[in-house]
Figure 1 (cartoon, rainbow, N blue to C red):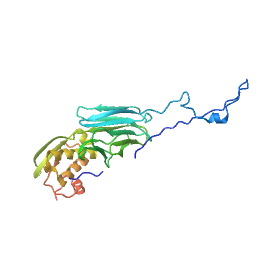
Figure 2 (cartoon, rainbow, N blue to C red):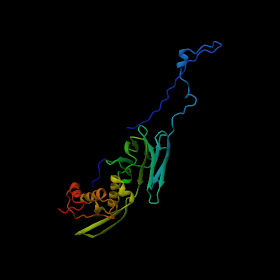
Figure 3 (spheres, rainbow, N blue to C red):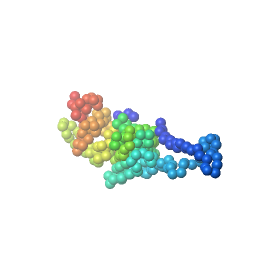
Figure 4 (cartoon, rainbow, N blue to C red):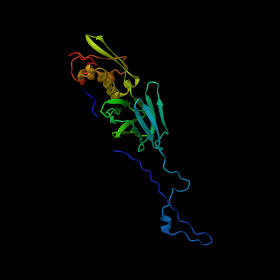
Length: 257
């Protein structure tokens, strides 16, 4: 079947410690020597704050578990995770230049960052089991390693992404427009999750019905996810000609020759 193709940043804080040269007092007390004045102290100067601490929290859905963390200096403070009744976990976190938030996969498997900055979460066998939607707030998701991504931002912002683990609400075979047709009703998350949503819809369809696993069916699925995400059902017809994705897109998901 066709599937879309798929440095760690460490932020260091330094504190510059200065010293003043004391003037002799009226009793004739001598000022400290230059060598003594240049010696570093063992802690930050009185009245200054130490490095900002990071905050972290967990986000999960079904068998997928993530840890979300952000440095204290990452702009809008705090991390918020809202778990919805539909199994979708909405993740909001601060991010800023040089101070990205971090999302780490805690459950088995690995992450794949897609071309549209969505993330497909795969199990140990490489099958899609979950995903992260495009991040909002002018930020984007970038790969750090196989289990970690950064939420990068060009200016201080609050970024939001959604973790989803279910992509198909229902399917039904029927006769439409001249042949058999599979009506696919995607979940709310899958409709807005870009390439990650398409990956998971396809994985669930093929797992439920191996007959679906053909290039032309996959191309029609991609076409609907790009061009008609809000359509009630995405109708996929196995009898349509295999003309390639570009032609399917040009024919509005319904190639005829």
